Length: 157
Image (cartoon, rainbow, N blue to C red; front, top):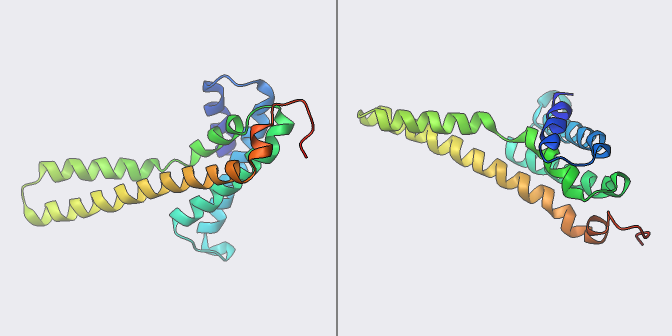
C-alpha cells in the first residue's frame, strides 16, 4: 500500500493525466510486493536484494507495457514512478556515512572497516539501481510494438 501511495506521489511530480494514477499505484504495489516475497524466507524464496529487485523491475516493466494501452499513455508514464519506491535509500545513506567515517578516521583498522562498509554498500546500491533500470527496460524492447504504440488510436496486432 505504501509503495502505491509513493508511486502516486512520484507520478504527480511529472504531471501525467490523472487516469494514470491507479495504474501507477497498482504496478508499484505489485512490484514492491514481488520483491518482498522474493526476499522473504517465509514465502519459500530467499533471494538477495539484487536479483529480487531485477525480477520485480521486470514485472513492473511487463505491467507497464501491457497496461499502458488501457491508460492511453506511454509505458514510461506508469513504469518509472512505480520503480521509485524501490530505490535503495538505506544503502546510499550507509555508503555516504561510511565514506565520512573513512575521511574522519586516521587509524588504519578503523579506516579499513569503514572502507569495507563504503564499498559493500556502494556496490550493492549501484547493483540495485542497475538491476532496476535493466529489468524495467527489457520489456519495453521485447514488446516494442505494444509499448511504442500505446498512445495510438489504431489496434495493435
